[in-house]
Image 1 (tube, rainbow, N blue to C red):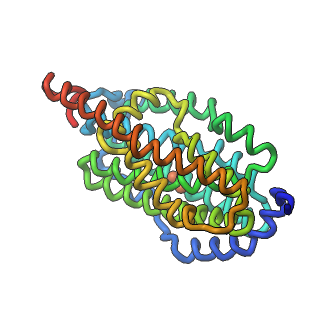
Image 2: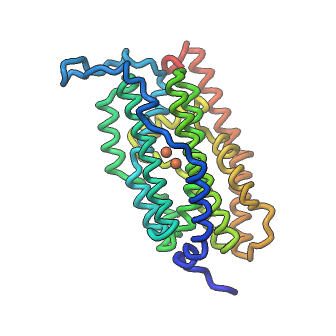
Image 3: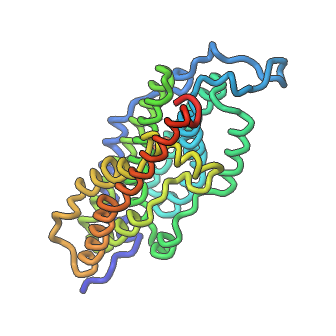
Length: 325
Ligand SMILES: [Fe+2]
Ligand SMILES: [Fe+2]
């Protein structure tokens, strides 16, 4: 049996694909500027400069919209930590290095525009937001234990599988957040960010697809492990559980969306269940993945939806639950 390729060998083999995907990305990406998406005329000074500090009544956003925007922004804020992870697992040379730099610059734009919007419109408490940013960035992004253990020093396949799903997950989350903000300015900003996330997803998905063709067994083992242990990058941020529950309950990001709008489209694109190039190891990983997806669809999602519907009915019975929705 052929030996596994090392991380360096995989990166070297895939470099021409990375170059093609990078050039396609650069030809498709649309230049935009955060300042064009922020209603500056709504801005006014805070107390330190003679104005008034934030009060909850100043926000027009529902609790759900606030939770979603804060979660999405803190996720974007944690960029240095993702950059460290990706640059450690991708090459810094050639097309890989160009991509990592470009991707980092584009992601930074997302936190710039989201923070400017929230501070200028007084959508959330800027002091709490800043404290949460410091707490979240100090904690950093921690890969799930299983992923870190399995990846060893060959983390490229795990990283590229993870970001293929994660970029699509953030796209869905930004897009659905737009729907609950009830503000055309927020809508325009979040659709703009979501379009970037889609292009990022395409780059990583195509790289992971090329890795599947190059080293099918190694790649499917990484994909299977990532899918079974997937955590949103915000895991560990202040109030992540509370905000995650609110977002799941109100259709911004829930288990069914995770399966149907994130996992399934990417897995279909890679033709995971139609491939004939896996060896015994690959077949075992594919079967584990199939069993996981079946359990999600047939057991975990129906159970979650039943609990959610009961909770929403209870809230409706009490007359509204967690404030304006
Ligand atoms: Fe982003
Ligand atoms: Fe992205």
